[in-house]
Image 1 (cartoon, rainbow, N blue to C red):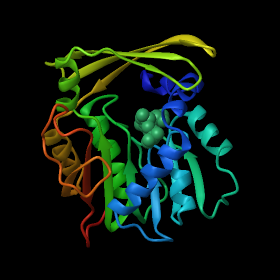
Image 2 (image 1 turned 45 degrees about the vertical axis):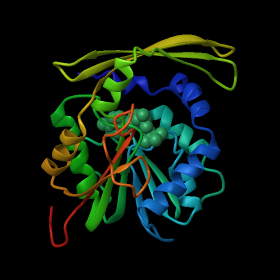
Image 3 (image 1 turned 90 degrees about the vertical axis):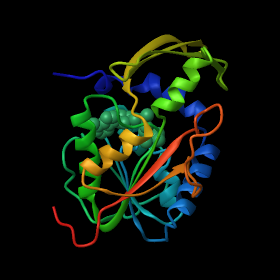
Length: 258
Ligand SMILES: C[S@@+](CC[C@H](N)C(=O)[O-])C[C@H]1O[C@@H](n2cnc3c(N)ncnc32)[C@H](O)[C@@H]1O
């Protein structure tokens, strides 16, 4: 049976989101991830899922050896198109469903960035985290960076219907409905502009920070810490946005197999 997310990440998605994330923003995020995880030139990074490679490419340019994996044909094609002069020895892309184990392993770090789980069942999310755990070497770390339920509820409590004018003039409206019992938000996107109009709908399972840590632990990772966005600042649930975006780091302990 096919799931909504298998068709969702297409060329229309790319036309919107590459305007939200221009290259300068992606480079700044890559620098923040580098500093947060104390990465070093030559380190092996798995960016999974990688989308259109918005972080894979600047991380490879900074000196990491990067593999980007994503299930979307459109995203992997766009990532290849945008790879520039980087050789295959520095940056590679594979089309892969992360619910299944990757062929390659031994990475120093695996990244799961920009709310890239919660699209299906909890079992599927655990399988994705397990894939990341198995892809890193013993002592390797997994970084998960995401929106979360507390942040989502803070938006809803303010009654916000976010509307953004994108650089090409497109008006983008983001309207969410939240099923608090199921823990699933329905995201409703509408846009209209020079590139045409359209809409997309997605179901996102929004976990609390507590549940995200437990999910990583169930996948066999040991909890290292939770941080504010891409920083080393410990996460605290403060302010109007309940702490803002969350990063959780887990480690595959030394000596652990399989
Ligand atoms: C919100 S995008 C984020 C992509 C990227 N991490 C970024 O920061 O731009 C989520 C991505 O997850 C991918 N994805 C979702 N489920 C997946 C799965 N089971 N296996 C591989 N990729 C998946 C989608 O194709 C999409 O490109």
